[in-house]
Length: 443
Image (cartoon, rainbow, N blue to C red; front, side, top):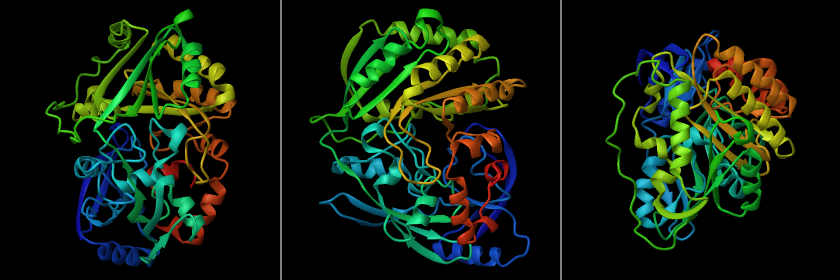
């Protein structure tokens, strides 16, 4: 197994940690290392790491187990779409191989540069959560390396507690080695999109409700608008097209080569962008056909776009509020953001369906808003104010985006954290698998 020390961070470039990176070339190498590590009285904290697209410190530890070489395929059923592959396979690789064959991911987050293992550990959701739930709900079996090196399989019916703890468990139950899940059939690589322009937040949420049968839905929201325009948005709905080529995406040539000056993204530049983007869409209702790449992965078109926020990095603040509190709670948060004059270059609103039974899964029925904030000296105290609003309405924050949530906030908003911890203890995971995030959250 190759090892080297280097500074690592999540996608937000905050925080940074000097880490020993372990690069195993086989499942056996992973098992042997875990067996040795678990036998030590004082072993270093360890966490698995895929492509490093979690935003904060959930994939940072004294040691990280890189899964990049676990990128092979075991089996594919061309009749049912069931695929079994190693955990290091990326969604980008899956799309490149299977879209031309007429298959697509059942659920995908806003970037294709995530691994299968990372998607399961984060229990990722997408624009179709209200219809198809999280990615892990399409997983029928997992293979996991436990803390003592033993390799086990689990599923919703076999070792179900371990399965429910691993899906959304942020890598804290073991190293995911491989998974079995089903792709969905498609006839085209294109999406039929309908877009609606809303005047304010109330109208935006009403549009979500009116079009809750759409397979995919997402809204860009102007988080700096105020008064009668508070929460004005552009809602995009999508369905897989029935005609068009089955052409996979192409790699982007655009690249941010280095960290940009911190002053580039400020209140005025964000406000100007928001105004131009909103008014660029002149029609209240429009239809178009576009490739899946810009519909699902608009930011993947710019490599290393995280460098736009400067060397101090940024954090993505994503929360969910129950549907009953959606309008009132979102209004309070948007007013607080507008009054702070911080703004967010990225502000994405989605509707969630029912929660699943995974212990630390983020989505619950309601509305979720994701916001990017450049890190400065006063940001975290401001976000603590938003935390209190989220808790007031029975909401919670997304662990995959988190870099600074308090232990108290986490334990109040994730009621099954103790059951999760009991499963970890049962399998000895709490002695080996720990990240900066898990230590910060009291796990």
